[in-house]
View 1 (tube, rainbow, N blue to C red):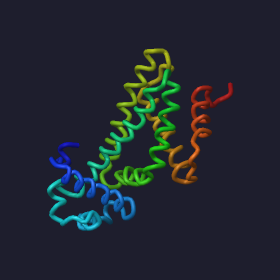
View 2 (cartoon, rainbow, N blue to C red):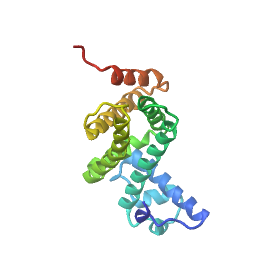
View 3 (tube, rainbow, N blue to C red):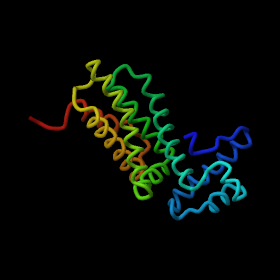
View 4 (cartoon, rainbow, N blue to C red):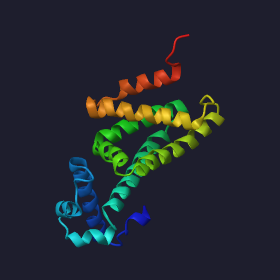
Length: 198
C-alpha cells in the first residue's frame, strides 16, 4: 500500500487524501473505472488537478490502493468479530455475519472489486488469492485442532469465500435484506450437517 500512495505527513494532507479516495469510490461506483477521469476525481474532491499527483502516480495506482484498502478493512472487520469465537464453527458464523454487515454498509465495494476483472485480470486474481491465503492459514490451524475435517485448505477457502460472496450478492445486493441471522444460520447448518442424503 505504501508504494501505491505517497502517505501524507500532516492532518491536512490526510484529509485531502481522504477526499480524493472518497471521490474516486463514488465515481468508480457510478461511472466505472474507465468512465472516470482524474479531473472527475479532483473536481468532486474539490482539489486542484495537480494535487492528485502529490499522492498518486496515476489513476491505476489509486484504484489498486482502494483494492488493498478494501481487503484490509474487510479482513480487520471480520477478525474483530471472529476473535470472540470459541470454535471454528462459531468463527465461520461470526465471520459470515460480519462480512454481510460490512458489505451492507459499503455496497459500492462489490462493484469496484469485481470491475477489476475487466480492468486487469491479475488484480482480480491477486485480490482473491491473497484473501484465500489468509483464510487457508486459519483453516489449517482449525484442522490441526480437530475443529474441521481434513480436506484441501485451498479448496475449503474458496468454497467458503464463494458462499460468502454469493450469499452477499443475493441477500445484500439483490434482495437488500438487513436481518442476516436466518441466512447465516441456514449456511452454518448446511456446512455443519451436510447437504446430501445417503
